Amino acid sequence: MARSLYDVGDRNPDRDNRWLNDRQEKPARVVPAGLVLGALIIAALGVMLVKTVLPSPASASAQDAPTMIADQFALCDDPKGQACVLAADSYAWRGHLYHLTGISVPSLTGARCAQEADLARRSRITLAAMMNGGNFDARPDPADRDPDARLLMRDGVSLGTLMILKGQAREASAQLIDWCAA
Image (cartoon, rainbow, N blue to C red):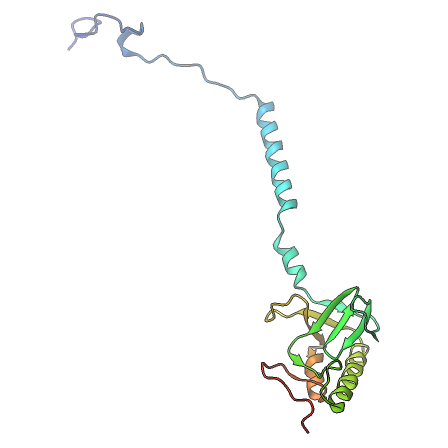
């Protein structure tokens, strides 16, 4: 028990002029409301800037979305054409060259026999007729790494599959197809 106001050893003030080891309290700081409001505005502008710069998941899925095509296609040889069929498996639309995925067709250029050249001409005309048969969707093929590969679909049916069923194309394979064989 202390005998006086000072306990033993507390008879002298500290070197910092504090008595009884009491901590000097500092006044509380008040942040001005304008500073807080300014920081919130800068943060909001930063968030808006990041949203406009970074791609959103919606824009990525928009690139993979099917494109509905209602144009009339003609036969042409211009890969920058607006709406034309170049071969039995390729077409130009709005200045860009696309090809059908999942099928192999006879080639008109480099045909090894008259039968292959004739089938290539007929297949090209068949594709143009099917593309002009009404609206269809051009979908990027998720299985094909080529960004220009398209699945052409009308009412849930692939135009490439119809080409195969009509005998104008064959299912794509790694083996070379001999179009001249009977």
